[in-house]
Length: 465
Image (cartoon, rainbow, N blue to C red; front, top):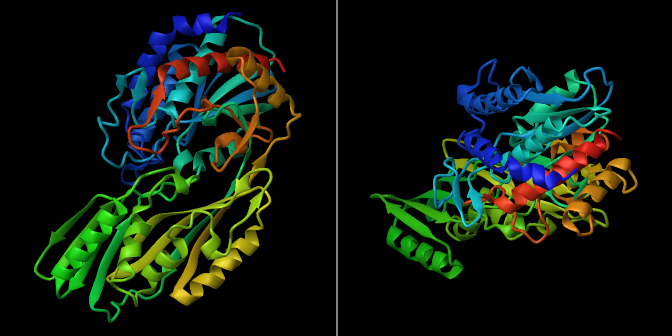
């Protein structure tokens, strides 16, 4: 079977359907949550779009209470199925984009939009791979099911729902990471810290509010603080000098007795905090000399800033399978009128001592009037190199690219962990920039087509395993 020829014939349809999906602003929205739209109306629209598309193309479909849906082909009486686990929700499109993030733009062979690479582009590639498989009328031993999750970016409640009501898959993959194959994923410790004392400290200046970040798994690219006090001209000059030295964009809004200080950082995925510039920690590093008695700011400056690997928290760790532990501070909230909070997204190597890591943080934060309010854990995921799914996916990748399919690991958490021997498989190719969670996110059209070809070959082999 010449899979590439089949995909090229469907290229215009693939791009048209992908563009339609990308226009849907499928960011989680609790304000529009209903019984039939547990993640909000926009995500509901995206899920319904994919299910309606699949119905039109002759798939068997199911919507599971708005949390997750799937489309299926293959013999209905087959006891086993192969799963391709995708998600149609996206993170907020923060920062200054060159174009509207929800109006796809094709430029220089790249399709720009929020979700282009994470995960709507790869989702549509996998969908068309299965569609082509269906239209080719090839014999399949197992059913093939493409699953559309709706809450991958905010806790994966969709897949937690799915595994409660649906039988487990024989094997499968998630097209939501890097090629060739990611066979090990770090676990996570997500910690919410609460500051117990927001009474204004007796400093020369008073911190009235501090705000940065919207998602725990993103490096925040914006931060702002409201400062009260006298001699604000001096503070204006100090902030200007600091931002110029750090080479970061900033702004200052002044009233009669306060300053609103704002600065810009650089967004990045929370699994790679060292690839971004954390606006929250940058602002705190300035504020620690303005309000030196504020322990909330002290903690951020002394223990979090410039500390992507956790050394200043005493939790640095690495193993040979998945490398180093990372720490991302994604959400900062402080107000003299309310309690203050700080979220930490910690990506844990396979062999990380979880309990000791949490205990160490609890010990450190006592000195800063902080306490742990909430802890959520995700255990690591690992598939051995000799599993049949690994061999099949390696072969498909090597045939279509001519390159060696080495096994990789990641700090990200994908849906692959919901299949006992599932892995992450594309769609970012080696040497290519991964723009997930960043401004001007894109997918290269040639890579989209290549991924579709690889998926078609791989899914056909898996369906006859």
